[in-house]
Length: 232
Ligand code: ZN
Image (tube, rainbow, N blue to C red; front, side):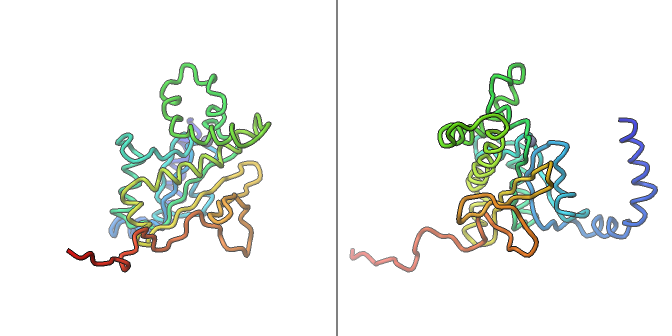
């Protein structure tokens, strides 16, 4: 820990001077981040490093298991962060990022390991659907493979939860918000992106178009132009 604290001084003395103009501009004119990323709190997953994002570029919300509780189940930090990012900052791209070797997903698949951690157990209930999908649809899968599958299915579930948030739902209907599902492989450094068309994660490679879970497009279920006047 002492080593980490020492690096704060290194930031102040060596890093900040080179970026002081940027920080001054951000302090005076406010932030205008390009995206909201919801990622796991795992120390090996660093959204800013993964996206090579500098100060002011990425709005980040991290928690165990990169979970987004469905709207109205609880008033919490994630719901508030999502609402602020969309309504106040006008963020148009939201990324939910899971990862390999995720402790939360391993616990999700082995709930007996959660004895003594009632808060984690309760929090992971928001990922129950991912566990059910893996257990019911992936025959014979177990161990690390099951946790990896759960991490990817969990991203799909949390993206669905995101759509229950009124600010996000309205932004999607208006064609202003795109949703992205990512999976970071810690050992390989690979980022896999969820392709909303095929429903599968694919590795992001140079020169390819980034797969998007839900591209921004006007989405209104009701055909307003088809209204037929009913005789009185
Ligand atoms: Zn994790």
